Image (cartoon, rainbow, N blue to C red):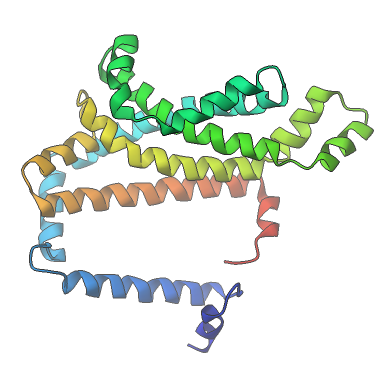
Amino acid sequence: MASLGPALRPNPWIPRSAYWMLAGMWTVVILLLWMISPAFFPKPGRVFAAMGEMMNQGLIGELATSLGLFAQSLLIATLISLALAYLTVVAGVRPFIMALTRARFLSLVGLTFIFTMMVGGGRPLKVSLLVFGISAFFLTSMVDVVASVPREKLDHARTLRMGEWRVVWEVIVLGQMGVTLDVLRQNAAIGWMMLTMVEGISRSEGGIGAMLMDQNKHFNLAAIIAVQIVFLIAGFFQDAFLAWLKATVVPHAALATVRR
């Protein structure tokens, strides 16, 4: 327990064992709060019973459908956003790309009809809505990442007799890869939150969002919480995978970390 003392001070280093002890303590606190929650809120036993029923109704299959849809949308959104963000180094297209970043203020619901007329319904509609929603935020973040590269790094690369596109590749693309993967991880979480709404707009192929909407329509609160727990766990695994990807691709980025 003595190792938990530094955890009460700002910016400490704590051993991994203390970190997991803190995580366990907070887990217990959350479970206790859940058990003493108001009567209308279903208790853990009822929620896990509902989860078993949802499993029998194909919850895992619907989750797999949603994961496939999300992976496809995230890949397309990542390629589009990175390409546009890196092109901001060209002054001629920078105003157009900056205008595209304002798309994050638009509502997906209001754009559904436009996308339906452009790509039709079904999976293409869901992919296009998710790509638009993720790209709007991802592009905004990546434009800031590109703009934040210090001029000294660019000048240093030029002193090595690199051409301007080589400077972009070495300093902005490769040099900022760790930050780029952090931005990807954050915006993937935003897209994950959009997924159920998009699947509720277009219910073709099913998906966990369509299942959640059905339970919400019937006011089945225990089943809603059960689906949300599965959705949350899947999100944790997604986040952990992207964190592993960063540690694998740019292991040196962890050297700058001051906290655990």
